[in-house]
Length: 192
Image (tube, rainbow, N blue to C red):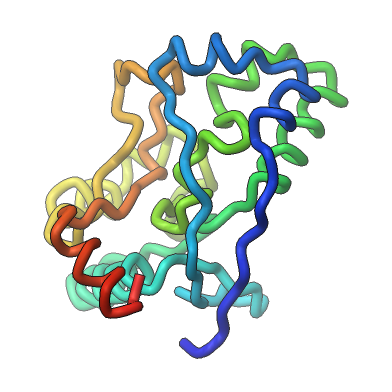
């Protein structure tokens, strides 16, 4: 798709400190600071016309995966893709304003700068028979299909049960992880 989005430059560590997030504690969990995607394009549009941005390679892989799933009788759709550092901070601020403790928040939201969504390669998925971002998604045919097929398109579930990151299990969160050689070639050709 032709639309693109410029990504922001900001200091995620300063934003974390302003939110009361100790960067040392985040890094002790083994979380890494992700660079923002250099180039984004519209990967999909929801039924209300809201665009979802991803890197071109991740977006193409998403479209291919969605098409094969549909051919197999499985409907999956995006509910989240690229998310800026500032948007991540807004989500955390909203939870803090609602009275949630930062430790609890950081089991369901990555600190700004530490989210795979910043890379333009992560997506959150759902299907018609599951509520968005709920564990019930794992009981759907869509989730079973993703477990069996997402790897063929370069997608892996980032936060399985018992993951070491400190995040809750997220059966809806998948990240595009092409090989390093694929990424180098795409960067050289300007398609990442």
